[in-house]
Length: 400
Ligand code: C5P
Picture 1 (cartoon, rainbow, N blue to C red):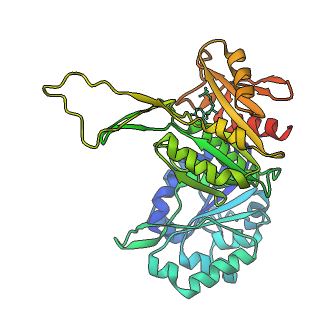
Picture 2: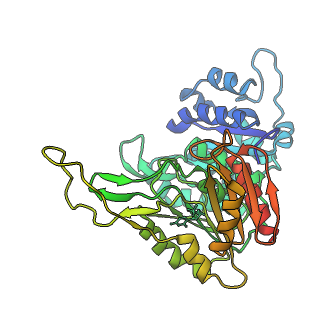
């Protein structure tokens, strides 16, 4: 799942987004990859080879020969060494050269020699991006089987706003991770996932909530999509970045009621639902339309009503063939509580995490789970990072 031991050529071209390449190298190396940077001559105007060679731990290649020694850099060997080549940022010029075989620099010759999968992250001004020649060249690259990591809309170096920003380095790494970890055992399946907390409004500025960050649910969404599922991620308010995957649709909600409404719409056509959200159990009966003031008032008494139990509602509606997975976050009597939830909510399995385990639960990047299945199994797992935990959850779900 990580990029451990993967040989990655990072091709950098002469666009302003090249300043982000340093971070990209750093993230790739951190994910365990060996990175060989190949720059076009123009790219060196935007970021120095010293920065990139220091971060990658390898001399940057830019010319066909090292000037003082005459040493030839074999684009053929390089192309064969690579497990993947990523061109980020890819300018309109380099995209045009790649599409048409104009091999006048080390980057394009390496591209033409490589048998590895190619990932291209375009970055350019909006008018260049929209030009028919760019559109045609990108579709040529697609037709060669290259993966285009679409640029985003936003403010550009020209201060104009439109499509042309290079995808963020974190997301590019995620695309590579997804590529190398792809299993397609969820291909064609529709999976509904809830994540994050819910906020229950007290007044326009206050709410009842909890410490859920959404990390576990987002990791499950990423993993499920990476395995081919079409994912609907119904997310409560979180401040972590949205998962990037063409097969993930995000529905943002705030309250338990909104989360229930979104789930009821999607569940009838889903093959599986994984209820990872930390739904608030209670909500204020009558949220105040205006801010509750402190001055001169007695402390307010907030009357609560029970929120709908989303997992239970889906459990009641579940038809044969659908799988429903719930979570249990417990502080005591963990096993008994988890098994009770399995029954009460008509779940097919429950993922238990205990706040008594270090590294488990809210806000951490790791989790330690035990899975209880409706067919009577109890499966404990080691402490792992949440993406690996997500993989275990999906593997166990598929065993049902
Ligand atoms: O009963 P408890 O809240 O501990 O159950 C946890 C499981 O039920 C989780 O899967 C959670 O997402 C789900 N749940 C829900 N709606 C609620 C409360 C919990 O879907 N109102």
